[in-house]
Amino acid sequence: PTAFTLSHINTAYTWLCKSRRRFPANADIWHLRFHWNTERARILRSLHAGTYRFQPLSLVSRADGSQVAVWSSADALVIKCLTLYLENVLPVSRWCEHLRGHGGGRASVRQTHARLLSGRYPFVFRTDIRGYYARISKTLLYEQLCRYVSSPVLRDLLCQFLHYSVEDGGEFHTPLRGIPRGSALSPLLAAFHLTETDNVFSRNRHMTYARYMDDFLILGGI
Image 1: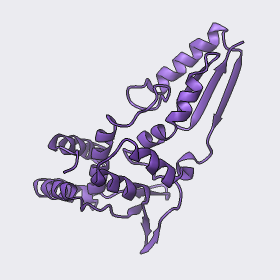
Image 2: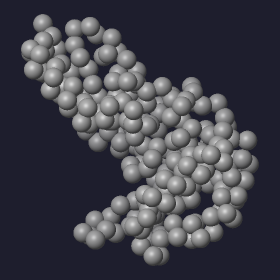
Image 3: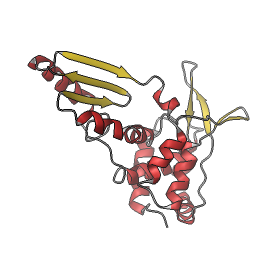
């Protein structure tokens, strides 16, 4: 069996209904909600049996003409369950401030402003990783995850997630590098992937370090 419980499923379902409450009438979220009792049992059975398979993401057009890749509602639910479980398993540095419980953007700005006003940090260095999500090595990230996740079922789900495909008019594209954006799991994996980097910088006593996703801020003292 997997580590997923009925509580995970129900919490993920509440989140999914809220996040997709404004989806159009023909979206699959309404089918999932109408048949929820049946679908919940089906999803749990397949998860426990290790047979759950993610579908390719679908390209959906927005009102402004742009397109966004969207997981099916059932897949988004399972990914949220995976996120709820991994939040208590994966080590994430407290210096990574974009995650819930780590302060967030506003708190990070307040702290940085106070440090700059203190006069203790005359040197400021800010940088980022260009196209961070799209450049993540799937192999390296999977190896990192396997250090903390031993369940074959969970490893299979993570492997499927990392090797995602996008379908557009019958054509399928599977990126060789990178992880998908716009899922509940992506911010957690993006934070976890650079934890070793966070630890190295945070041990330096002569500077203050913070990271917000792929944005790095280093304040150096004299």
